[in-house]
Length: 130
Image 1 (tube, rainbow, N blue to C red):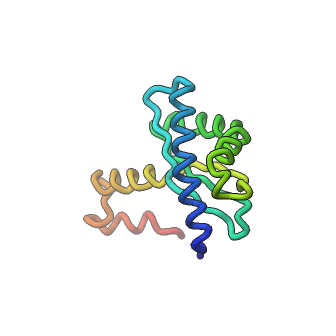
Image 2 (cartoon, rainbow, N blue to C red; image 1 turned 60 degrees about the vertical axis):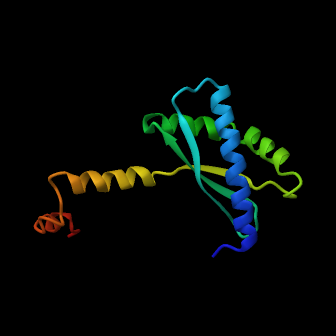
Image 3 (cartoon, one colour; image 1 turned 30 degrees about the vertical axis):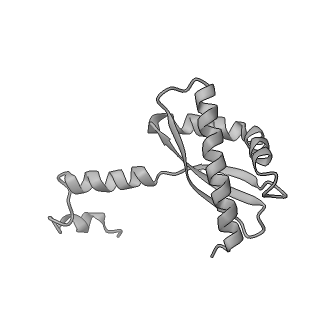
């Protein structure tokens, strides 16, 4: 369970990270790419922040994630400059892809498609683990 302090820091980091990443994408010449920070969770000792990114289109997600990870020190420095009056120490940043939208899309496709287990209970048998 997160403390109020962890939630506040996560909210600050999420907002500032979104601005930094969107500006970097625009300055880098990435057209038609949307990068959003879907979630930030901070450890109890406030030393590590796990950042979950949603990147659209999905085909460029892995490539952009590697670019973000390689520029983590610059991003961390920019965040430290923005939050210098709010945080004493900037947590280490760890970036991950948030694939929850793909997961939801897959569920919707399977429900709309021919393999609907709600309408055909026989499909559940082949989905169960042996």
